[in-house]
Image (cartoon, rainbow, N blue to C red; front, side, top):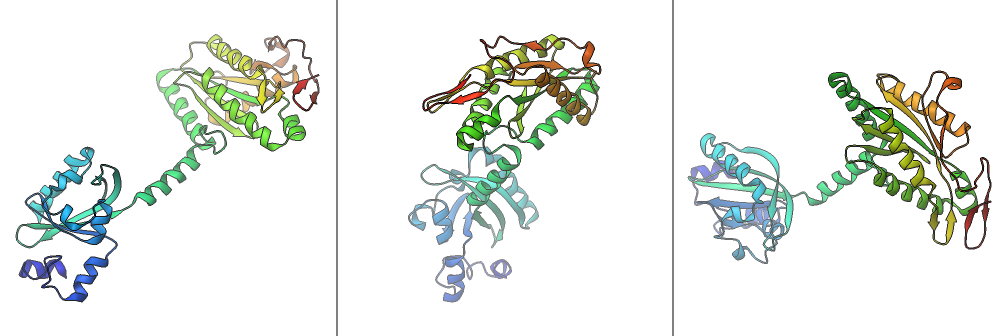
Amino acid sequence: MLQENARRDPNVLVPGSRSLEDPYQNLVDLSPFGISLYRDGCFEFVNAAGVRILGAASEQELVGREILDFVHPHYHQVFLERLRLLEERNVEVPWMEEKFLRLDGLPVDVEITALPFGQDGFQILFRDITERKAAEQRLERMANYDELTALPSRSFFFDRLNQLILQGKRDAARFALLFIDLDRFREVNEQLGHYFGDLVLKEVAVRLRLCLRETDTVARLEGDKFLVLLSRIADRQDAAKIAQRIALALREPFDLQGHVCALGASIGISLFPEDGETKEQQLLKADTARYRSKQLGRSSFQFFSPDPASSDAARRLSRSGATPGSELAVRADSFLVS
């Protein structure tokens, strides 16, 4: 309605003009949307919401300023292209997410549209969507990352696994899947409590990242179980080297606020394509190898083999005197293998 009346008589409905009836002026002033009049590249009017969104103290700080001063440089080209379409077609352009810059230089996420106003002006409407974007990012992070360890989530990891399978089939590329199960983690929870168990999981995540290449992916599957994807390996020796690096890193004692805990990990490894060409096959083979590794005494890694009796001996690591099945003892200042 405002737009049509403005086309008939641009002098009647210019926002901010006191020729407007007070009720109509109040609609503009009290709108939660930023409402502005743009002409010849500059603001002619900005309502109270627009002033607030752009971080100004008053409308006078904005009137006469070039509007591009308030558009983030990454969006200049898009903004100008939309105005060009507006001039050519003389119709409203769709709402679109962009980023503005406040007077103090801070960025603000906005949703913006524009429509013709009068003979040679444009009405630009925008709304602050910063809180909505933050909520979307939180939801995205919850969907893609484990809240405790900040590692990628299971769904993110499985998507990556499916991508590697497709790439492997297309390019004849090999990769390895590692299934990691912490040894003796249950005793940490039972004897020290879940708070210290969470500290272990966080530290494990840090150590795993340090063991891997930039092209690899690590995720927490559940509880004390983790998954690792080693992309584009040349052979099983490549996987063995990284698995050994991980096993050694996880054998290092965990200092839990004065409680020193020695754990370790059992690691199962499946290889693509020899151990299966589907996600389910790879996970099953790696889990089977993990179970075999744990049977052979923990703190070791094992490749999947359809015939465990003829498989390679488990790659056991020196454990500084620790023996399979050893118990954890708790003292006031330490958490030791005994």
